[in-house]
Image (cartoon, rainbow, N blue to C red; front, side, top):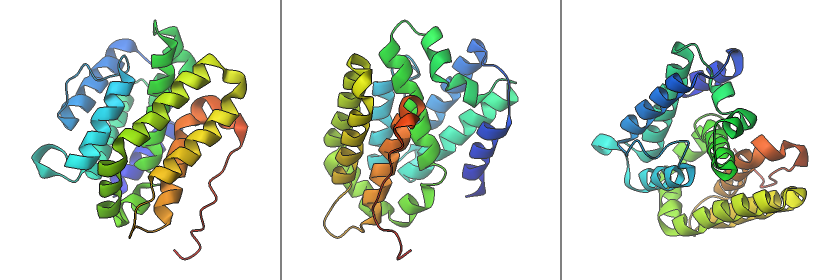
Length: 218
């Protein structure tokens, strides 16, 4: 489990610039590790989101548990970027992505997704891991709903950023509700809510939203 936390340390500590060739190469390694087409990358972030959710449901290469498959691949990409003397923090930075993308929605969506993965493979990893059977069932039964939460947020926030904080709250509520399933613990509602809060944070950290599900029993 230590290697999942290593990725967070590397993101936080290394400084530099993002070099496009290395970035593209590291994304290719990410796709290969997931066993998906390399076209699911920063230029197709919503497609990449669907692929990741499918892996959460069906598992990764060689039958590896979906959560581990995604987080191992994410960690490999972070390490690749660091080894290439570029940085994940720069490459996932929204202004940098906007300056290197012809479609602003794609830039935002990719930055959002990477920030959510940082949470799901870092601070949120153990909540998910301890309750994986439940969470896997939630993804299987609520996959379309969760993607709808994301898609609606991306479109609405781009069209009307002045109301961005309202859309963040709507998305958090949407993910929290989608993370509810009979027989599953309430802490997964927190996981869902926080996953979306982290998703929106690269653009809307100013909103100061928080997830309120009670985790005092842990």
